[in-house]
Structures are given as C-alpha cells and as structure tokens.
Image (cartoon, rainbow, N blue to C red; front, side, top):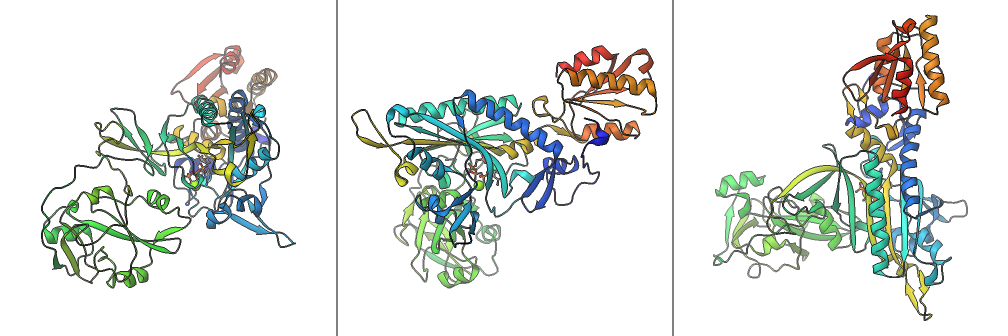
Amino acid sequence: MKVSEMFMATQREIPADAEIPSHQLMLRAGLIRKAASGIYSFMPLGYRAYRKVEAVIREEMDRAGAQELIMPALLPAEAYQGSGRWEKFGPEMFRLTDRGGRSFCLGPTHEEPFTEAVRDTIRSYKQLPVTLYQIQHKYRDEKRPRFGVIRAREFVMKDAYSFDVDEAGLDVSYQKMYVAYRKIFDRFGLDYTIVDADSGAMGGSGSQEFMVKSEVGEDAICFCDECGYAANEEKAGWTRGAADNAEMLPIEKIHTPDVKTIEELCGYLNCGPEAFVKTIIYNIDGKFVAAMCRGDRDVNETKLGNLYDATEMELAAFADVEMITGAKVGFAGPVGLKQKIDIVVDPEVAGMKNFVVGACESDYHFKNVNIGRDFEADNVADITNAKEGDICPKCGKGKLGMARGVEVGHIFKLGTKYSKALDCIYLDKDGKEHNMVMGCYGIGVSRVLAAIIEQFHDDDGIIWPSIVAPYKVMVIPTKTNDEEIMGLAEKIYNDLTEKGVDVLIDDRNERPGVKFKDCDLIGIPLRITVGRRASEGIVEVKARAGADASEMTADEAVAEALKI
Ligand code: ATP
Ligand code: MG
C-alpha cells in the first residue's frame, strides 16, 4: 500500500477527552473515530490490526474444538425473559420496539440465544459435548463509557458457550478454554494475570478473569506472594482477625458537632478509624439496606449486590438517609433508626466490641456499641474490600498485595442456570432427561487491541507486536524526486509485496522527519529508509522497538523484514 493513497487520519494533537495512552494513541494514529460516547468506527489501519487480533482468537478457538457461528445482535425480548435477564440487565440493556409493538434488545451477551439453539438441536448425550462461539458486536449502555474502546457501549466480543452432560464434562470444556485463552494472550505477548472473579449477573459456580496488568486498569487485583492466590477485588476474600473478647461497656451518647469525616471524628475522640464502624445506607432495587464495615474499610458493592441479587443499586439519596435516620447525613448508625431496614455487618464488625457509630441524631455519635445488646444484625456477610497487607484468605499466611488490570477475558462455569431456565435438556443412555451443564467464555476483542497498545507504546507512538501490526514494514524513501532513491525503495517494496509481507511505502512528498514521526506513531515494527546511499544499494533498517538503526544492503533488509 502506498501511504499517499492510504485513507490515513493521523492527528498531531492529543484529543482532550482521551485520558489514557491507548485511547490517545488510537485517535492520534487514526485507528478509530468516535461516533458518539462509547461508540467508535474502526478506520482502515485500526481495522487491519483489529482483524489480526480476531484471527489469533479464531485460530485458537478452532484449535480447541469450538465451532464458529453467528447469531443476530437484534434479539426478541422473549429470549431474555425466559431467564429473567430482561429485567435483570436493567438500564444497561439497549431496548427497542418494532413497528408491530414487539420488544427487542441489542444483545449484551448471548447465553440465552445459544442455549435455545442447542436446546432445539440436541436431543441425546451422544451429541455432547459441544462448544460454540461467535465474534460479534455487543451492546451495553454502560454507566460510564470511557477509555475509548476499553469501555464502550458497542464493542466486539468473542463469546463461546460449552454444553456438557455433567460437571466433570464442564471441567474438561472449561479447561480447554482456559488453555486456549492462555495461548491467545501469550501470542499477543501480553503481560497478564489470571484471577478468581465474581460471577456477577451470570450466576454459576466459578470464574476466572484474564487481566492485563496496567496502571490505568479499572479493576483492582489482590494477590498473595506466598501461595499465588490472585482475585479481582470485587471477589477477593481476606482473613479477619480474631474476635475481640473485651467486656461490653455501657453505651454512651457523645456530642460531636461539626464532625464531617472519619478523620475529624478520630481526632475528636482520640481514637483510630478501627474503633469506628461506618453505616452506609444503600438503595438496592428500591429496598434500603444499611451496610456496616470498620471505619478504615470500604464496602464492596459487588459483594453486597450479590447478597441481594441486585439489579440496580446505589447509595441512598440524602433525603432518604435523613428520613431513615432522622438525622443529617453523616450520623447514620444501627441504633435508633426511624424505620426498620436490613442491617448487614461484615464478619470483622461482628467480631468487634465497644465500637463507635453514628447516633441517628444530628451531631451525635454512640460509643461502646455492641451487636446483640444494642442492635441486631440481619445478616453477617463478607461485604468489604480486601486491602494491601491483609492476610491471604487461601493460605492464611501471606499478605495481600494490590495491582491494577484491564479485564480482557472472562471464563465462567455457569452450571445449569440457563439450561434450567430455558429447558435445555438431553436424554442419557437410559432415556432419562437431564439439564445440560454449561460454561461461557468471553474475550473483549476491541478491548484487547487497546490493552495491547496500553502495554506496547512509548512517547512517540504505538509499538505493535508483529502478530497484530496492521503492516509489518514501512519503506521510506527520503526524497521522492530522486530516481535512484525511489527506484530502490520501490524495488524493496515490490520484493516484499511479492513475498506476501504486509508493507507500506511512504511515497508522500514530505520531509523524512514527518515520515519517521508518522511511522513511529502508527507503530510499524520495521522501518527501511532509502536515502543518500541508495546508489550503493545500501539502506538503513530500524526496528520500532529497538534504539538503533543499522545500514545494510537492500537484500539484507528484505531478509530482515521476512523475519518479522
Ligand atoms: P467489566 O467488568 O469490564 O464491565 P464484564 O464482567 O461486564 O466486564 P463480561 O460480561 O464478562 O464483562 O464480558 C466479556 C468480555 O467482554 C470482558 O472480559 C471484556 O474484555 C469485554 N467487555 C465487557 N464490557 C465491555 C465494554 N463495555 N467495552 C469493551 N469490552 C467489554
Ligand atoms: Mg460490565
């Protein structure tokens, strides 16, 4: 391809709304173009790289025995009503109505249609196991679309679904996908971690996420250096300390005017945040719940949401908090609530004695509060985040560390959740009916592309790993009006084209500096510059990832390019 003819939209300026390197670079290098918040076009260069990502994923899926098909993205409501997810997805689902008044959605994920397809096709255990997949657009009206294609509202996912006769079969299918995922992310050269994950809205018995390590990652990962435990913060457990055996002291109401933060309260009472228990009131699908955790901890909303099988969950509005507590916001506590609401305490809180809480009265706190004597907890459950230095929940010895990651893949053991809901059964050898046992496996194809850029870039631009580079080689003639230079550049370009190498030639009448800059920005792995020594047949070769250029003959340069 000649750069002069290429539909290339590189930008010099960093767009203001692009906060992270991959998003900035995808826009600057002209890989994507924004259509609306969280909705992007892939431009020719970006689409080439995207297709290479897709090709690797497809190859490994096929190799693992999964069969590709394609489902509609526009799906009738009935498909999701049977499983209850028509309601469960809430506002994240894009919904629409046809001219006849029938409801549809744009598929956010396809468990239901795959389950229906298998239900209607397979009768006997002899036809199992089977794993099916597609690479297709998904639609989610994300609350906060951001970071370009990392959190988009229209994005491409490879989604696979396995169907087995029993749990043991599922284990085998799951393991095959696990291995395939490792191969895929290894082939991209990504630095990633596999973590235990929350199963979220999908239900099911176990799941793991593939996290690309990155400071800009939206997910926090907890890991134990002693035993290798690694889990998404949403899911990560931690070992609570021993329960306090102290005597219960008499409860005391204390005047705490103008105290707005936990730090101020600690200063006022001359104690640490560990002596305090926060009471945070949530609105979970219209029901109010008070979640209690120690003053130095945070409520884990995923864990709390799972406890209530939440569809929509948010902090209760100020007015609601004031109504429930009868006090200004900031003085909520479990004693003296004006309305009976569920109180959930973390096991750590359950082990505490004589703690401080808000008094449900403006400008007052209670001291020496105790569960069982002063209030009852409706539920004791793990509802807090682990933090750095906590004891590992697995080995009980190591300390947890924290890192950030971008989730690029997610594998789930679904079990029979969908096959029960949608009546997906097979007959065993005695003619008895059973529900199929399912797994599901997703990779964010467009997100992977961004994650690769996030890990492979420098100040000048993208540094594509060769396997996904839109073009592998750029030939740069330094002068386009010099016959010798153009002649040799074109010879190299033609040679490489004939040999099947994806090669570009920058035949624009631009200064070499401009061409080098663009070549670096779009991340082409190898640059062959044809300049002042063209008459001797000598060119300059530089790898995008390397620091130095070296001179060699044109044939040697071609040989070098073939190695990429
Ligand atoms: P997240 O926690 O990031 O929202 P998820 O748990 O909702 O992800 P899954 O439903 O497991 O994601 O989807 C499978 C894969 O699809 C994810 O691992 C991720 O790579 C990708 N993905 C999910 N949501 C988006 C999105 N909004 N934009 C781009 N890719 C996404
Ligand atoms: Mg999501």
